[in-house]
Amino acid sequence: MGKKEPDKERLEKRQPEKEMRAEKEQPESGGTLEDIFAGLESVIEAMEQPDVPLEKAFELYHHGMDMLKSCNDKIDKIEKKMLVLDDEGELYEFDE
Image (cartoon, rainbow, N blue to C red; front, top):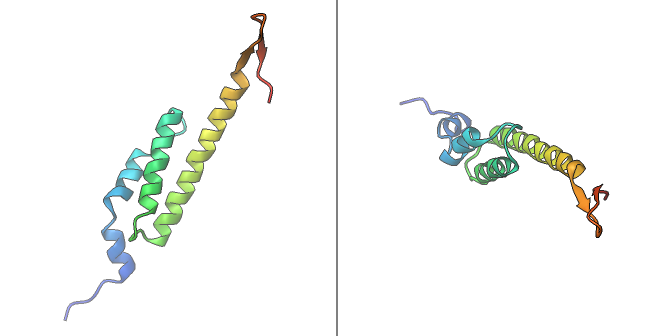
């Protein structure tokens, strides 16, 4: 009788298509905000798959958090560069 593979190994060999796509589509921090948001969507879709191994889910989670941090950093930089035009046409830096 043949030797059975443990469930963990079998699941890792059957890596879901969305999970593989999420790994390929994850942009680096140099991408645009739109690119990063699209990558985050792919990560979420991959994590929602019912047969994702726990270790892979943690890996996807951490990568998603890194992408989210990159988004926050980019938004902070944009906010610092924003200028406000007053009634008289004068430009001032944006204050929260």
